[in-house]
Amino acid sequence: MAHKKGAGACRNGRDSNPQSLGVKAYDGELITSGSVIVRQRGAKFRPHVNTGKGKDDTIFATSDGFVWFEGRNVSVRAEPKSPRTAPTALAAARA
Image (cartoon, rainbow, N blue to C red; front, side):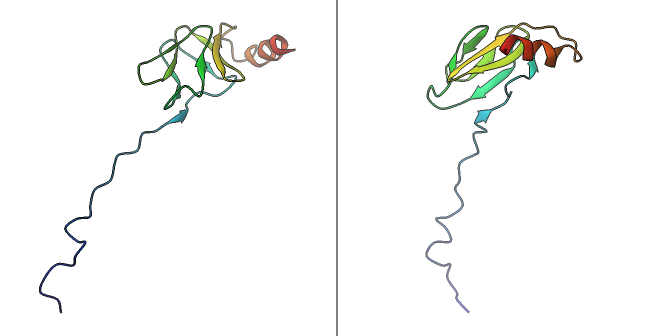
């Protein structure tokens, strides 16, 4: 049995915390003002209507409504908040 620690035993044990990046609210979801839509590194997605960009490139909603992805642009559209009319209003707006 060894009487000394292995060569790598005292050098291991460091790992960074996860950053939890990615899309947090998807296309068509109802969100409130201030909700995070996308957490990202760099400007993969860009803010558009009713959205803002934080200093770490996080895109957040500045008003209540539905999330709307248009290519790389992310916007929040003000639509009726009723769950019954929301999908039909969203489908009609896209048509």
